[in-house]
Length: 300
Image 1 (tube, rainbow, N blue to C red):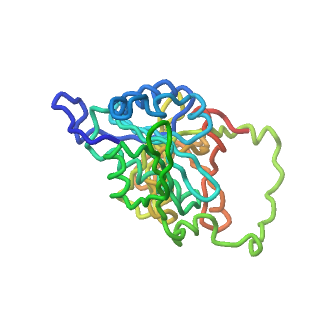
Image 2 (cartoon, rainbow, N blue to C red):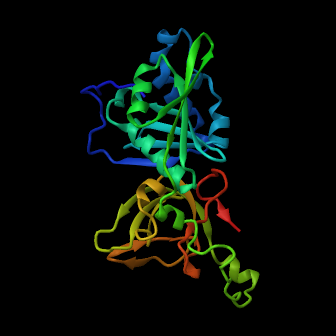
Image 3 (spheres, rainbow, N blue to C red):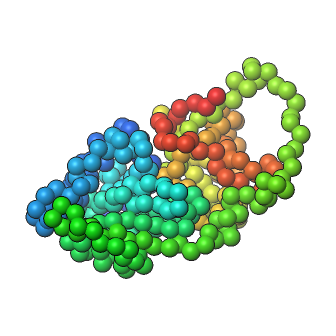
């Protein structure tokens, strides 16, 4: 993440709407292009292309979590993370050269920490070249600690980590208020036919934006991309999550899309977010795909 002032001809203003979403396979070329532009300044510093410039982003988008930050219609920045057993690894952070110096990298780093907490992980890790001095200073300023330094391709790679502490009570409760040994399942509902089940249209959607509904202390408004269109979806998440925006933006989830739209708190909801746990009185978790798939794909 290089720090430089945006030019006066930069079309992105401070008022431009920022949208964060998870990358899909079709985004691989754009991810590669932005990464190469962001890291090009380091070529004369280390005498070669940095490793992120040579990575296979078709594989990365498919196997890792790559979150894209848009400013208006422009891909402004991205962060690539890899969930491990006991930590979240930040593999790549790239900010468009024309938008560096606006705190977009810091915003994505904060998003990664919220993502780690939502996954039940209490530690962040990353690595970078010691010659990328501005990057190292940034990470140190974000409370990352140097773990070790290792020689690599004529230079030195510094490995860093940051403890997020114990999983906060709110985050822990999001994994369920009742232990598996205490939970008693409710009786199964009456049998339905396959015809009844097929009436429901359940699809994968990308949560692009999360906004608080001012007239409600429970509702948030989700802007969800379903491939062919965007929909506004209202969901009662404010009392279930400490920071719905940081935890949900850029994540895919399942939605019932053929329910009759209804108004809540004066706003129209065009689909229903599916979760696990709410109907049984425990703090719910999202029903999410195990890996990124195209928006609009049907479940069933």
